[in-house]
Image (cartoon, rainbow, N blue to C red):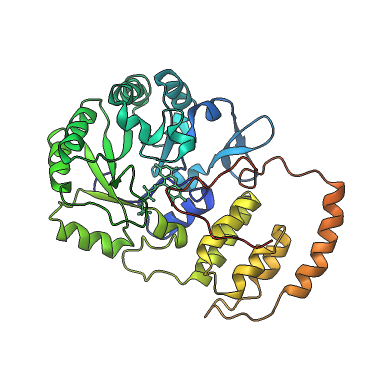
Length: 371
Ligand SMILES: Cc1cc2nc3c(=O)[nH]c(=O)nc-3n(C[C@H](O)[C@H](O)[C@H](O)COP(=O)(O)O)c2cc1C
C-alpha cells in the first residue's frame, strides 16, 4: 500500500478533512490524519452524517474529533494515533479501523503535550513500550481486520542506534516505517539528515517493510530528484508536511502547482461543503495566503462563513489581485455578528479556537492573525 507513494504528512490542525481532500484532488497518493490521542478517540461516538455523506467521531459536547468521507478517502486514508499504552491503543484502533485503510503510531512528535505523557518522540526512549504497542496493534487490530499498522519515527542521535531501532521495529509486524529525517532535538528549519537512508532502506527491505522518508520535501519533482540523488529505489515513498500545509497541490505529477489564490478558493469551497470548523478553516487560510497580501487580513477579520464567502468573491482568481475592498461589508456585518453573539453561546464544535489548544505543529509557529 505504501511503496513509492507520495503522502500528506500527519499534521495536527492542518491535516483535517478539507486539506486531505484538496491534496487527494491534486495528485497525493495517501493522506494521514492528524494525530488523535487514544483516550480522546475512545470517548467519541461514531455516526453516519447523511447530509455530508461522512463518518463522524464526535464528543458528547458536539466536538467533531475526526471526520472522513469514505467515497473520497477510501483506500487512501491512514489514521494516526498518539498512545503510550498498548491496551488503549488497541481499544482506540478497533473503534476506527472500519473507516480507515491503515493505523499509524506517532513516535516522532517532540512537543511537550505529547512527550510529557510518554507519547510521540518519548517512545523512542522506551523502545520496549513502543514495540509492545505496535505488536499489540498488529495482533489485535491489523491482522484480524486485514489493515496495515505503521509507525512514524525520528532519527536517534547515533546512526547505529537508529539502525538497531529500525531492526527491532521491523520485527513487530508493521508494514511501513516513516522516518522523519531529523532527531528529536532538531527543529523543522534545520536541514534533515539523509546520509544513511539507504542503510535504513536495506533493513526495511530485508524485512518486507516499506520505507517513507520525510523532512523538507517541497513537491513531487523534488521527491523524484531526491530519490535519484540518494540512490534510493523507486519503492521508497515520501511524506510532505509544511510545504503541503502552505499549498496542498504540491503533489501533482504533471500539472503545475497551483497559485495561492487558486488554492485558497478551492480550499474554501471544500471547507464549506464539509462544514469544517470555522476556526480551523481560518487557521489553514493563514497558512495558504501570504502575509503580505491584503487578503490575509481580510480573511483574518471574517467571523463566519457568510463573511468568508463575501471575501472570497473579492479576489480575481486569475491573478490574485483584489477586486474590491470588503472592509465596509465586514465592518457592517461584524456589528450584526457582535449583537448576535451576545445572545448566542460559543459553538461547541470549536476544535481549533479552543483555549486549551496550543500550536501542535512540529517546531513551527503559526503566523499571528490580528483580531
Ligand atoms: C502544523 C504541523 C502539525 C504536525 N502534526 C503532526 C502530527 O500530528 N503527527 C506527526 O507525526 N507529526 C506531525 N507534524 C510533523 C510532520 O508530520 C513532519 O514530520 C515534519 O513537519 C517534517 O516534515 P516537513 O519538513 O515536510 O515539514 C506536524 C507538523 C506540522 C507543521
